[in-house]
Length: 282
Image (tube, rainbow, N blue to C red; front, side):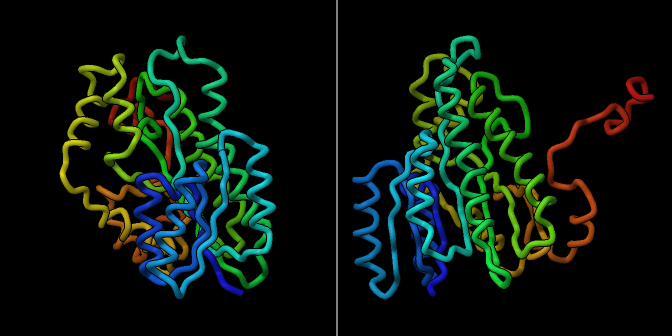
């Protein structure tokens, strides 16, 4: 039976890059997205160009939990050894007091709860000798404060804690789960930032403007990191947050024990003694 990579958010900016990259490597893919028209267009294009491979599509609105179950039913008969979760939404941007509860629920469903659902789904399908590699994407505001991005930053922070918890809980299984910080990319999210009056003159606005002004975004670092996390070179590296821009991850396999037995590249509380201050700690 063919082993597939499942790409959630395949029609988004990062999803398209990873879809093309893995298809070019000869991988059979199951592509998922919310927009049926865009998904069918992607499947038609990629099937024509890589005619010797198998591609399937699963329409799924990640904001709606009922849709997860329909997608799960469609995935039952496939063996998936790679799950790359590229899906994500920012939701309403602005002061927390002005964000609707309904919008925040939708953001959490897409960025967090659906990620938990499909992670559990694929892990529960694992057979004894199967291997599974999982990549989730973090977002701006998950490792530090990001005012005016409340729903997005909260949901992505929670996702990172889920990744670490899950890795520890399943350390004896033949799987690895990690998160990737892709950096600022010229995605739809950046266009949303530029269009929002509340963000004018902020750091996020200028970052978005610079990102969208680039003529050619080079995804080489991001794709190389994904390759690393999906193949055996990264075996033993689990529950970590890796930056595509700033981490020397190619060296990590030489330090597996240090990574396994430490809190390096994870989220932690900073104490006074961590910064050389003695007044705040007992």
